[in-house]
Length: 386
Ligand code: PMP
Image (cartoon, rainbow, N blue to C red; front, side):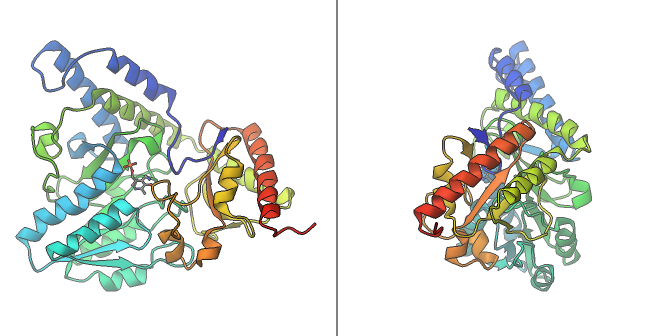
C-alpha cells in the first residue's frame, strides 16, 4: 500500500536503519568502564548531539525517554511534583482542548494532587484561542502545555506567543512537539519554551525512543522512575544504544531535509488535492486555511464515513481517522469536538500525510484509489443515488 499515515508514524529512514544495525552488532553498556562501554557511550553522545542540534538545544538539555508519551508525563507530572511542592501559591495548569491524551490524561491525574487543570479552547480551525489563553494565564499559572502541531489536523499553534504570555506571569511553558519534529523547523530558543517533548518515530526514526528537552534555566522534573543514574538520574535504565543511534541518524537527516527549500511534501499534498478535485470528489480541509505542517492535512469528505474509507482502502492506501492511539474507540474525536464538529460531521474526517519518500506517481495512484473507495463507501451508505 501507499503509505499516507505519517501522523501515526513515519517510515524508517534508511540512514536510521543502518545506524541501528551497526550499533546492534556491537555489544556494550554505555555505563561500563571498558572499551565496549566507551564505544556505546560515544554512540549515545553522538545521538544526543544530533537530536539537540535539530531543535537548537545543547546536548545537556536532552533527556532520552521511551517516546513522547513518557516525555509528556515527565514534563507535566514530574515538573508539577517538583515545583508545586516548593511553591504552593501557583497551582494552575493550562492545556489546550486539543492536546494528545498523554498530556490531557496526565494533567487530569494531577487534580488529586491539588492542581487546577484548565482546558483552553481552540477556534473552528483548530487554532489556540490566544485571547482566552491570555486571560487564563495569570499569577496562579504554574505550567502551560500547548502542542506545537496537532496530530489529527496538522494545525500549527502559535507557541512563541503562548510561551511569552506564560512567562509574562512567571509561569513555565511546555510544548509537545511530537508532530512538529522533522516536519517543520523547531528551535527551542526562538520558541522560548522551558520544556519540549519529541518522538523519534514521528521523525523517520525507530519507535520506542523520544526525548524531553529541558532548558538549562528550567526546574528539573521529579523522575517518574527510580533506579540508576542514567540520564542524570532523571530517567534511569540502561540506555537503548541502538535506538538512540537510530534517532540521532534520523535527526541528522531531518535537519538536512528541512534545509531543502522545495516544500516537496506540500507540493505532493496540493497535487493530491487537485487530483481529488479533478475527479470531482468534494472535500474540505478541516483547518480551513489555518497553517498546517507541509504534506499533512485532515480532510472532511461529505457523505463518506472515514472509518469505512480507511477499511475500503486497506489494501492500497494507508490512511487513518483521528489519532491511532484512540482509533477503535467509538467516541467522537476530542480534537474535532473541540473545533465544533458534530459527532456526525467528525465521522467524515480522515487524515493524510505525504512523506519525503513519495513522488507524483504515488500521488496519482493514491488519488485514483481514494476517489474510487470514497464512491464505493457512499454507495454502500446509500448517499449516492444513481
Ligand atoms: N503527542 C503527539 C502529538 C502525538 O502525535 C503522539 C503520537 N501519537 C504522542 C504524543 C505520543 O508519542 P509516542 O508514540 O512517542 O509515545
